[in-house]
Length: 379
Image 1 (cartoon, rainbow, N blue to C red):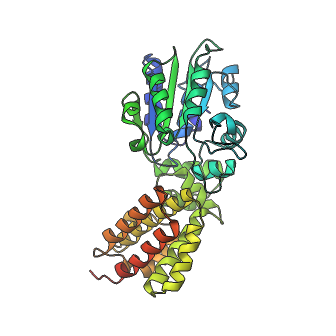
Image 2: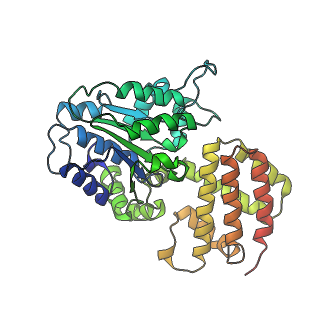
Image 3: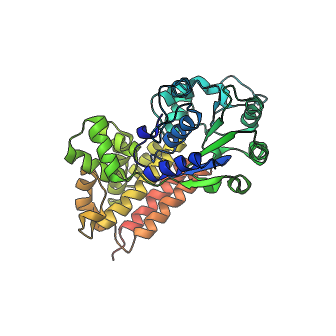
């Protein structure tokens, strides 16, 4: 992975290059940003840049042995740490670690550095389990980093979603960050840095990764996917700075299309006050995995905002796809200043409750019945 392969994020790339040029690379970096902004892509590109033996023109060369090994994810000084589920057939005495799913991780990452937790859970066959980092992960890292660099340069650890580590794991990782092995760089890729232990956050230099510029997404859609300019412009605006969202729009059977159908169904049933059908809707939503439920609710939140802004009749304020806009033409007036905050609060509460492992059927049915009341509020 080279910096030139990362979509947008030119300011961050330049900052990382400058760190290396000035020989001021921190022992721990924390890339924070929303899903689809390219945090993992930047982490991989930075790792390749550090390991490259022939850097040129502000990028890794892509042709030396170090780069080729990094590209194949087989470099002995490039380590990955990520949340996993408990492997099937293992008991509570087994200390799960990333080693349990190394083959699945490598296969997924070779397909591209833009992916979601849901994709990773599917690769592991997680069903309804949540992925975590336990003490087995910290023990594995301690073992790997106790060895000297095989190539005589940097050792790079890319930690994906370290906010999912438990207390025991965090305490051991903290010791590593306090006394890092020589020439070892930790690159932590975070989506919810607020969930990370304060002691770990304080020992890493934070770099905020913004949403990708619409122009960069538009160019990437044209150059990498062969989309015509007008379609690419519309897709880029609707993507909201996420390359994943842009790609999702290209898939006719996309998850986002499913979420839109669920949103339309919810609002129509709530407007018509069909309680029995809303219970069936809640059962359908509850059958989704918890990670997917949270993403769906986040999507609902965005649509509430977009429908509210649609009422101002200013195209520059709205970021909707054609299908979303078709529904908004008739539905938008029902999202107004009298209920927009209330509906947003209902969905935020549902996201919180799902994250705390509440009964999903109850959470969704409670939200749905309260939406009935919200929709009748007039400005």
